[in-house]
Amino acid sequence: MQVSEYKPRIVAFCCNWCSYAGADLAGNNRLNYPAEVKIIRVPCSCRVNPSFVLRAFQRGADGVIICGCHPGDCHYTSGNYYTRRRMAMLFSMLEYLGIEKERTRVEWVSAAEGAKFAATMNDFVETVAALGENKRLEDLRCKR
Amino acid sequence: MQAISSRTLVDIAAKKLASGEVSAVLGWKKGLFNYDVTPAVFTDEKDLAENFVYTDFCAANLSKYLVNETKKPEYRADNRKILVFLKPCDTYSFNQLLTEHRIHRNRVYVVAVPCNGMIDLTGAPYEKCVNCKSKKAVVYDELVGENGEVIDSNRFDEVERIEAMSAEERFAFWQNELSRCIRCNACRNVCPACTCEKCVFDNPASGLENKAISDSFEEKMFHIIRAFHVAGRCTDCGECSRVCPQHIPLHLLNRKLIKDMNEAYGEYQAGAVEGSRAPLVNYSENDIEPAEAVGKGGNNA
Image (cartoon, rainbow over all chains, first blue to last red):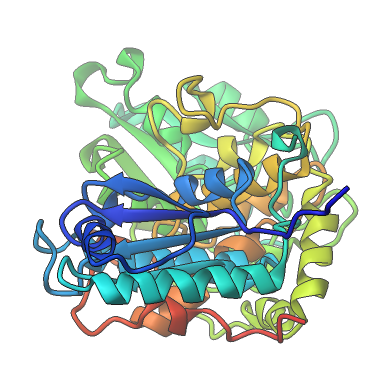
């Protein structure tokens, strides 16, 4: 029997106004990024509640990335500024609890940056793949 | 020993009750043993004289009780007030509740009492008193004794010690601590910052409502979310750690957030100034990136 290669599961929260369109552009330009990245569209990166990130890890994500508009370019003027503070505190807290800091990331990707989107996702998947499976924030009941 | 005797406080409260200025007194009531002191509402002078105490066991922060007590119609007759005794650290919680519009200031008569630190039933001082952050009452209508000063405490030392550990050690440390959690919700119930009408942990639709911990993930989830919900509003009163029946050092989670926010967004003490804006409901265009906020600790080996 062939042992399948480990592929990390990544959840990407993408802002409707920038990164989600950026992902579209990456597709239109036929840029490759791993299929393990599951995109969840949110109206603004600020919509991402810290519990969403935890919930993603619980349900089997190995890494969570939040993509929003560049600071200053938020469709709702200031949403991503709040994201920046909130996620800085959340990631620091997760690190404090011993969760590898490489599993979480915030990246600013505009709708024009299809190439950056693909490059970011490739890099993130590679980083998380090197860490291996998410063991420290897993919920055994959610594992198959 | 406390510098102020129970007698002094009883006299103050009895006078206010007798004059009719206040309809009730929120204080500490003695129990069967000297250490089982509980928060209580006194409405008559006899009860007050017999049962009110202010001793080394009066660690309970009374500010949260005001949220419900000031709403009760029986105490609101004739616009009379509720008298409350607050220790210096409790005044911060009271100020924070005023900031959040949870208490009507004009329904409360605050008597600030000095505190020399409180002890538990074994006689050991509470962690919150060992690392006392302030002897200064920040809000009061009447001050008993002298007002103290804000103390330059070493309260972040323990957080720094954990930060310096490797990721593996930190994980082991917290796994060991949090796995003892029995989800009794005592920390939530006592927390003066936890005054939501409907708590997310009581809401079946939130996906966070769980009873007994059936997976190690849940205890982490509960404590991370709780620390986050009070982030920027936590005055570091230390009640969570005091009431934890499993002796989990919960204050270390809140202090980590306070320390991070102080370092990244400037010094901020919740409750020190009424009406101040907490770091997480504010922003600056030059804030640090999330990637810069992490990685201060030991390596991730």
